[in-house]
Amino acid sequence: MSLLIDFCSHAAAKHAMRRWHYSEMTPIGRLVKLGVWESGKFVGAVVFARGGSSSYGVRFGVDQTEVCELVRIALDNHIAPVTQIMAEAIRKLKETSPGLRVIISFADTGQGHMGVIYQAGNWMYLGVTSAGKEYFLRGKWTHERTLSGKTMGIDRVASREGVTFKALRSSLISRPTSVKFRYAYPLDRQMRRKLNRMALPYPTANDLAAEVSKVRHRASTPEGQVRSLGAAPEDPMDTSNPKGTHG
Image (cartoon, rainbow, N blue to C red):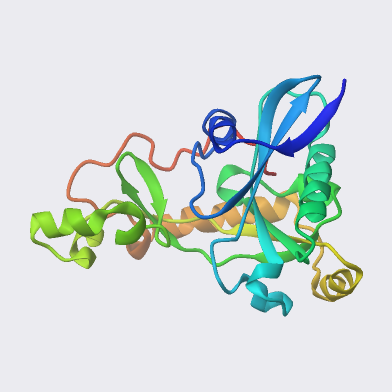
């Protein structure tokens, strides 16, 4: 079996993310899309992005252009270990982006992910993210950071209905989000030394269970309960989708 990691088209990466990643979504913004082929067969994609926040680099003392996020590992049935595929993708990224110094990624506890592929790949664990909120819009859950007129076009919906954006948002079904385990991978020796000083012990299955329990508790409190003008979707807290390989 031969393994090839190389740049692929947006259409190919989108196909992989829609078919073989649990989110079934393509991230917005500028992406670096690397296809995965085994013995000539396309089996998925590894996708990097600038990241969801302009402050990502601050934590590491680097410019925004020196940090990126591993946003998707979307794979069909494959033979090579995920850690090998991820390592080859990082090697390709580093070769073609010499200014990069650190990669970050997140394991979603809401999907039952602990980040075992990052742990196996010797990434550094940097703690958990803060819990947020997401809204049910157009048949899917959308994080509050994404819920903006610019990206979702709901400013036009609000204008059409004669209400403010804030009022429209408050009418949507909402729920607290799960936290994510944050990992980072250094691309040079200086960054590795810096991350070694920041690194924490890897989370365990008990840590994952504790975080899931916290989300359920927040959802059961008055401020965490669903708000809606209509009926809630079926199984709005269901996280049993088996797609994806993060974690």
